[in-house]
Length: 104
Image (cartoon, rainbow, N blue to C red; front, side):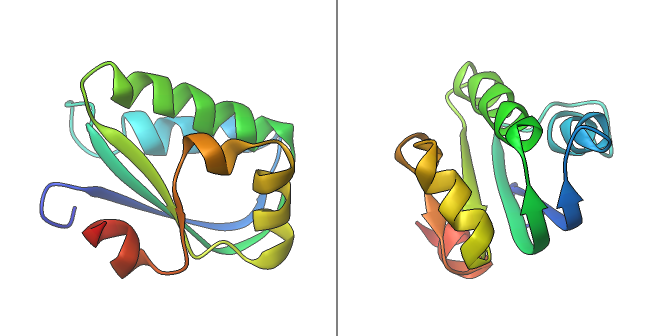
């Protein structure tokens, strides 16, 4: 947590095999309280399929229900391309750095 914001750092590939782990990290993680503000650091992600998109949309719905927010930070170009291709960047702000995601 950074100033009440859950920062989740993801490494490797986001696909069907890890979607449940990612979902748990975003919405449950450490402690019982569901976070209302989340930054997802994708700097270490090399691949993402629709499973990742679905997790992010579900997380956005969950935090929006509590007037919170979800932001993506530091996605590499191939992953950012996927996010833009499906229009996620119009729903979830994508920032070049974690610091910018935390401060915007």
